[in-house]
Image (cartoon, rainbow over all chains, first blue to last red; front, top):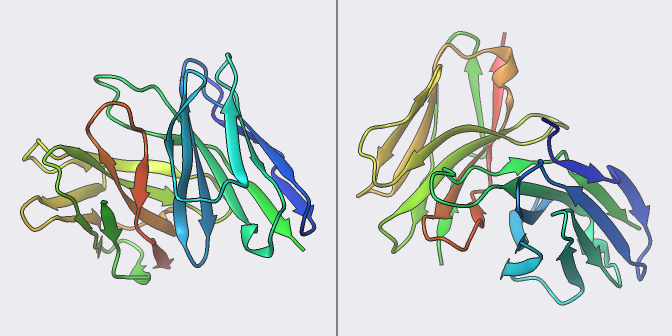
Length: 115
Length: 116
């Protein structure tokens, strides 16, 4: 079974640009979550999508947005990039429900550098 | 809001020895999940061990075990017979047991070095 796939793995952008990151969850998983990982703030929850609906949202500005498609693939978008948006963006998928034991499966991440 | 604290930014252990990583958390919920995740350098995060709060018995997975003290809100990870491949960042994480949320709250992590 293929794991969580994130693309692109690395990218460099300049301030003011926008970026779109993609995540393909494990087959059958309907929940996709996004996390931002930085050395200073650690891992912070961005948002979670389940069956194409955003269920939870972290404390990030509106420049951060996401969506989920009918095949459970998800994208996140960051507009008007700032230097502080440089981070590793992690996607995680899960199969929610009783007995799921709550485990999230993570992708390798997309490393964004903003110059 | 729930918080997770890992008070040891870095730890080191000799190969074949035992090390314990600390984690405390704060919550008003009575049911929840706790996890330890491992993130090797430049590799993806993987689950090491999980604990359901309603279970009194401490979870174990081969060389990995936890000491779950619910009243003290403490959840430490013990790694026995440490191996070079155990070197990684270890994150403690909390998840509500309630349905409708897959959100994890992470600690800042502990970097574990294993010395040969």
